[in-house]
Length: 165
Image (cartoon, rainbow, N blue to C red; front, side):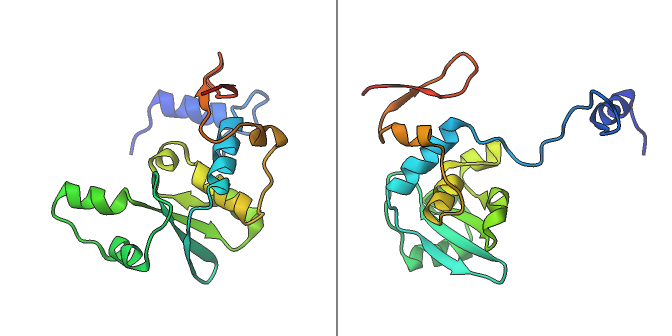
C-alpha cells in the first residue's frame, strides 16, 4: 500500500491535535428546510407499518403521494427478486424503509432508503418520524410554513424563505 502526499495532507488537516484542524462531521447538519419538511411530513399522518426488533424498529413508509401501504406490499418489498429495472422501481420506489434505534437519544443515527437520505444522510422521513415519536422537537420557525408552500433558496443555498402559492 502506498500513500500519496494528498492523503498525508488531508490526514494532517483533520488531526485534532492541530490548532486549526478541520472538524470531521459524524452527523449531518439539520437545516431549517429539513425541520420544516419533516414537520410537514409528520402532519400528513401517513400510515406507517412498524416491525420491532431487539434494539431497533423498522418502519415502512408510503412514498410520494401514497398515504397507506399494506402488509402484502411490505412482504413483497422484503422478499422481492427482480430481473427487470421496472420491477425494482415499482417495488423499491413505492415504500421507504426507515431504521430507527429504540433509544430516543440516538435518533440522528437513523437510516432511510429514500434518495434524499442516500445523498445527504438525513431526510424528512427521519425528522418527521422522530417528531411523531417525540424523540425530538422542531424549532418554532419550522412550524410557520403551511404544507404545499414553495421554497425559494436564499443566497447561502438554504431554503429558509418561502413564497405563497
